[in-house]
Amino acid sequence: MNLTEIFNQENKREEVTIQFPFHEFDNEKILNSPEINLVLMNIGKGKALISGKAVLEFKLSCARCLKPVKTMVDLDFEREIFAPELVTDEEIREDQHFVEDYELDLDALLTEELQLSWPSKILCDEECKGICKKCGKNLNEEKCECDDFVPDVRLANLMDIFNAAQK
Ligand SMILES: [Zn+2]
Ligand SMILES: [Zn+2]
Image (cartoon, rainbow, N blue to C red; front, side, top):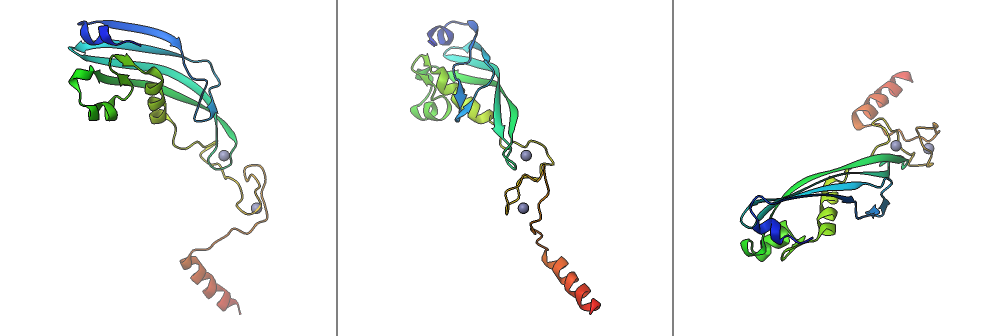
């Protein structure tokens, strides 16, 4: 995507809706066939605003029981970008590595935005009981007989007193 006009032409605005360019992200398949709406806007000499919106559907594993959970990842970003003559090499590396000269590397921008919007922890349910560490059973589906009761110190002391009193 060439940015020459967007950087140089005052009040220039371009809007496109295109098929989202990836079929997967982070080895997870994108299950819907999303479109992305992109708006590029000149906001001064050599300055532009790029914004994008898309909703992507994934099936990600619950962090506790590993069950697949339908997860919508909402991409909704807005970035200020600058023509190469207005920024240092360091600023390009840190803030807009997806702008090379007057070209926008859309894949690189979307990769970064997806990383930023990626959910940090997926749970099938806030109350998910997870998987027994000893026998591997899914504790949402069945109980197991494993003894994973680890009393804390105060409780252990109380139980000692209780046990002693019973003798
Ligand atoms: Zn779960
Ligand atoms: Zn168990």
